[in-house]
Length: 241
Image 1 (cartoon, rainbow, N blue to C red):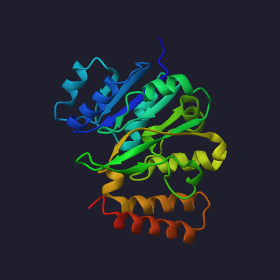
Image 2: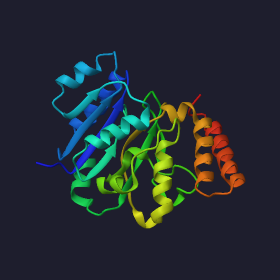
Image 3: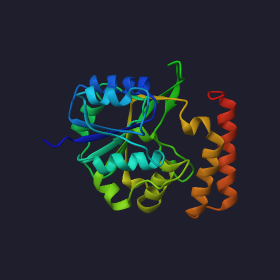
Image 4: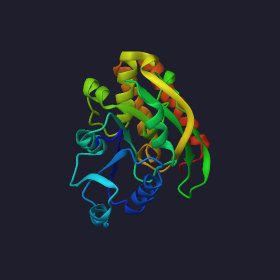
């Protein structure tokens, strides 16, 4: 039977993080989802884990051309009406899929909030979904954005960028449909762990955001001013060294 949600996880040599994500999916009160794992050809036992894990509906293990390429491979494998991208190491609260099953029905992007945690697991804040601010940055937690598969069909997949590939996609969508294309779920449904590419290379990421904003019509001085402000705020926060 067709599942309501496809959850896509990409990984590369991050077996312990993948196990943490798997544990959160095993704990879901609703199993109305398919889990798709796209591995970049890991050498740390990931392939053996995927072969043995009955929770995984589809998986591939092969070299890819970066994060966007891996996401796109997963989307192309998805068979559900809605798609989530859950990074290796991040976790959903155990009632997230149940909430989606009972409350998500429209052809719009639903987005929820996420806790922000350090690598040690300490919760240091909350990432609020604020799609109305997408003109100025990535103001929604990607892993908690529930995207109808029909929207990917209409707007295409992720561009092959080194940074800000998620912001590029959501910015394009927002520019075309505006805030009416989103439904905000003002609830927190999981934990996002700092330390990924966008955190470690945050300066490059914010500059990439500015380039995307400029490409989509924002005044270049305003775009780079926004990036500068975000860089300073991120540096002052001290969360990523």
